Image (cartoon, rainbow, N blue to C red):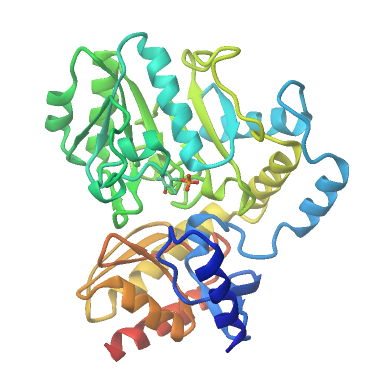
Length: 389
Ligand SMILES: *Cc1c(COP(=O)(O)O)cnc(C)c1O
């Protein structure tokens, strides 16, 4: 038995089989590289699914220092890092508002659902989109526009209605007297990197203004600089400013953290006693997130996400044998003519990690500090995998 096989055997016996895992056991990382339990090196262009925005082993100093001072108190009290991080996030969005902290994308979207219902004051329906993904909580799967996540979990949470993405007429027709909000990913991630059009986002903004609805963006995957803009929607239509945003994944660069932002005048809708979470916004998590956001600025990583992302897409488009390459910044999807799952395994054998999206798309969500030479190396490994099929 190899070391990897030994560890996989533990999972077979003791870990619930909720994931379709690849037979890879990682033990160590540095920047955009990871190593498995048998010493093999990989270029990590999955980024832990858009989480590791600074790559691996990038947060050691802040984790050590912050944990020596204060890990957790409780939201019954105030701590400076939470206040400072909220201010920073509001500044990065660029529109006055306030922030609520939690621990994951699913939990952040739950906060959006509650915000919408409280705002709706009797209106409770939220319009979401086909092929969307909003997390695995019960309300999250109810919001998600994909049957496969719902199977076996009926009855679902009431009040979600799904319409085709980028179809403004369909949304307009779906708005009824019970509608309170519209929720979408500005770039659909799990279903294969599919961006909203600028006209669609602007049309939704207008519709929400006309019908007094909240426009809410799930930026759990496309936020935190991934597109070359801090907010994903700004890479599409900077004027289509939402009323609320959810974040998680890259927010603290791999340390678990989620949050929502809501603009004036909706920022105080979730009033004292209406929402809470024990671990939300601990001083440790907030210091880590502040360190990530500072690094994004100091090293100009949004520019790198944009320019290196454009370069990556250009290079991928030169390859023959792929159906389509879609991407904004370092959120890149390659649609294959074959199923993505076995392809991704072959790619890993060639030393490149990517993530499946939909059935035929390989998704690349590398660290935002990835270099051109790492991109060249990834494209070469990708080409080699294509040539072998
Ligand atoms: C990953 C993801 C979620 C769920 O986040 P978790 O942290 O896994 O709960 C929700 N929405 C989108 C767009 C995501 O990509």
